[in-house]
Amino acid sequence: MGRLYQVPIPFVAQTAQIDFFELTAAAEKPCCIHEIYLANSTDVGDAQEEMLTLKLKRAFGTVTSGSGGTAPTPVPQEPDDAASGLAAEVNNTTKLVVGTGTITDERLFAWNVRTPLQLIFTPETRPRIKGGEKKVLELTTTPADSITMGGYVLIEEM
Picture (cartoon, rainbow, N blue to C red):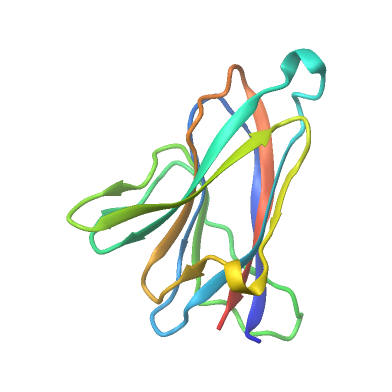
């Protein structure tokens, strides 16, 4: 097993579609996603309940990275582990777009924001990221109103 890193997604008020995360594996350091966790801290009553859709995408070749978010440092789950080679961006308000590269949709999810979304992948189903490629979790639904969302993604660097 490789080294595990957690990429935090800070809780931020959102009113539009975003990329929750954009992960780029370092060359010669493929990764896989073990877990995705998202929650909201503002829409907690029946009247605020929303169903949002999410899309996990694979991007490679010439693509334009998203912007408007932050670039957190992946946190090693073992204190003595080395720093990750993974590049992470979170809460990008301008989404990743294709140039002459390729973006493929891999998985679609629906999330009722009243409860946290916790996706724990089995070893056989873990989304893989080849060296130099990107994985992006895109919010494809525009929230009905401002909603404060955040969470984390747990990555294994092999």
